[in-house]
Length: 260
Image (cartoon, rainbow, N blue to C red; front, side, top):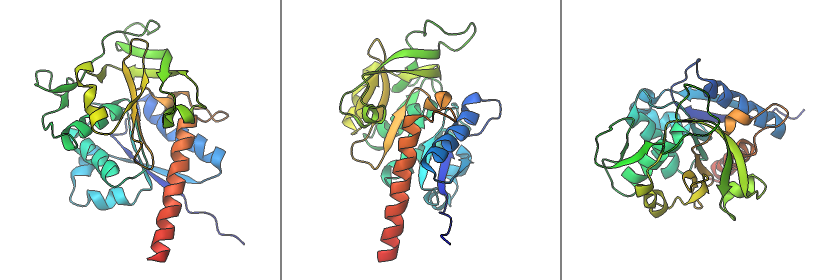
C-alpha cells in the first residue's frame, strides 16, 4: 500500500482575526487549491509577535511556503517584516496579499535598498520616507462607509510575459477584490523595481497592484486579495500556482536531503 503523501505546510504570517472575512477566505482558498491538486495541505497562522522570538527562524524554516496575510496594522510591525525577510532571503515560496503586499514593499525598501526608515502612513503618518500611503481614489462601486478602496476592481492590467500574467492564462486584464486603504506611493515606485521586484499589475490610472521576483522560486505580492474570489468549484489560479510552487520546493528539498 502506498503511503499517504506528507501534507504541504503553509505558514500564514499574520494575526488571525475571526471577524475578518479575508482571514477565513485565506484558509479556505488554500484548501480549494489543495483539493484541486489532490495534495494535502496544512496551514497555520503565525502571530507577528512570534516572528521576533529567538527561535523564529527555526519556526519559519519548518514551513514549505509562506503567505503574508491581509490585516494591517499588525500586532508587530517588525515581526511581519522579519517573516517576509526570511522568505526573501531563503527563497521560500511566498505569496503576499493586501497588507502583506504593503509590508513586502517596505521590507524590500529597508533591507535591500537600505532605506531604513521606509514605512507606511498607517504606522507613521509624519515620517520622511512613506513608501505606502493612503489610496488616491476610491473604487466606484464601494459600499457606503467602506474603506476608500473596497470592492471589485474590474480593470487590473497585467504585464505581458510576467509570471503573474501566466498564472492567469496570459490575460491582459483581470478583475479582483480589494479591501484596502493604502497603496504604493508613486514617488517610490522605483524602490521595488530597483530591488529586483518589477511591477507586474497596474490599476486603471497606472497604480501599482502587484510585484514579483523573477529570481525566486515563487515570490508574488498583490494589493488585491485573490482568496476572496476563490471557490470550492473554482479555486483561484494564483493560489493553485502558489501551491504548485510549494510542492516543487518541497520535493527539491527532500531530494537534496536524501543526496546530502
